[in-house]
Image (cartoon, rainbow, N blue to C red; front, side, top):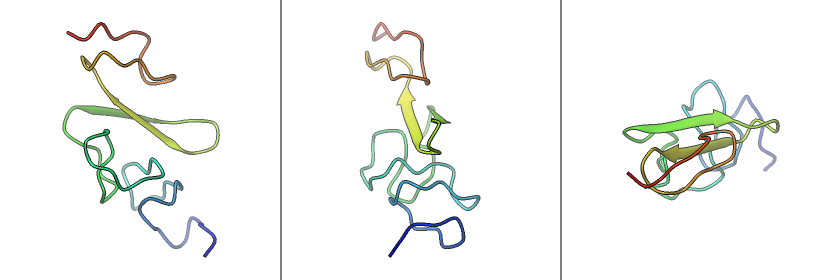
Length: 73
């Protein structure tokens, strides 16, 4: 099945209006839940291909577009 904006499928990488995020996986704990909802305190942005990039401030990981820096505190 080809992902599209009319048929939301969580985990297909296409964020629809029915999803808060879709980071192309169903892994919980990475900022975008397995039900395509933003996880508590996560920041999610869309990249140029409409893919969700999510991250948490203070985890020591700096993701492009989401944070400028993250010192782990």
